[in-house]
Length: 443
Image 1 (cartoon, one colour):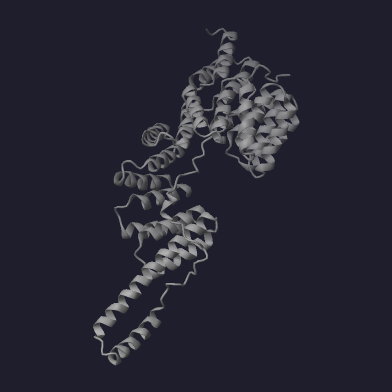
Image 2 (cartoon, one colour):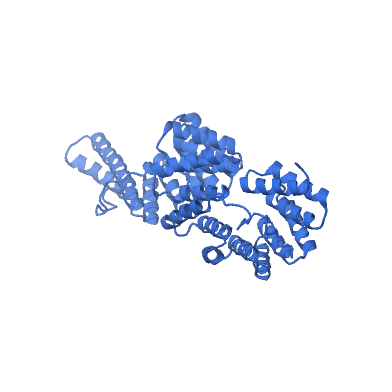
């Protein structure tokens, strides 16, 4: 039976990236706090109509007291103006208090009132935009940042805030445009560099992302998140040593950084150090029990160690955390394939493909199961589909090469193993491909 036992046991097909790029930085300091909630919200809120009636009454009173009406009118206007300013300040402070308490809706109500009283206070729009961002209402956040920019187009903060909202909507190009403007206005805006780096990262432009993370770190050397995401960018480029150095620095600055432990664990898996991969994944899961990627990496490490039961437990946790995601079924299918339970492997990979037909990994793992059942034609069909979906997927070429080798198709096998060496940066897979080429008489 051609079960490809000398193939690297991926446990997964590819290792997930640990880049918490959704955790973009927003400047919440614009929302002021420090006043007790007990202060009545309407103490200084002067009703305009009532103010006019009071003004008329004071004119008559001034006549009765033989005072100059202009002085009385001026005094009243000053009083009304001061009342509106003080009321606005109190609403802003109360918004800050409610925001800190997590009562976002009351904070928005406070800011609504402040803006109604004095519609030209730019900070109120920025603050409300920040809160809308925090509750995931990105369109309203963008509308508020737009208004803030209209009031003061030379302030970097609303451009940065609007950039975070565009980023969260997946509009990375618009986000980059806004971060460019924020940086132009404030060249020392570390968070804007960090966030623009996240946008470049999400666009797959890892070199630009790293440049921005470098700048953010230069300005703010203790920005742990910048080291963590730069580590993810280096991982994507295959620079594992630099990535580990960044994850180490992240952990030094912030020992509670789950993504740093998870990312370092993923690299340890790639480097073949499965015990360290498990150790780092354990720590990541301890800090963040819903970190799916670390269960996935730990499952891959357990699979590579032959501890299939623990691997399956982790895969089932992935399924429990993300039942509508293909990753858990793919991982469990890969583990079943490595275990030799090919029918269950095919069943799980079928589920993964049904959930996400353009996901290359389950085609590889189902192909491994078909190859294990000596159904090479089906295996080749799945490997071809994986390559079609992801042309630079080295493992797909390796496994297809294994089928060609088993079928005595030497030229095709050699071409695939050479392709692995051309594409792959995973040491274990490179060595496997080199060994297969030697077996085929290629030095």
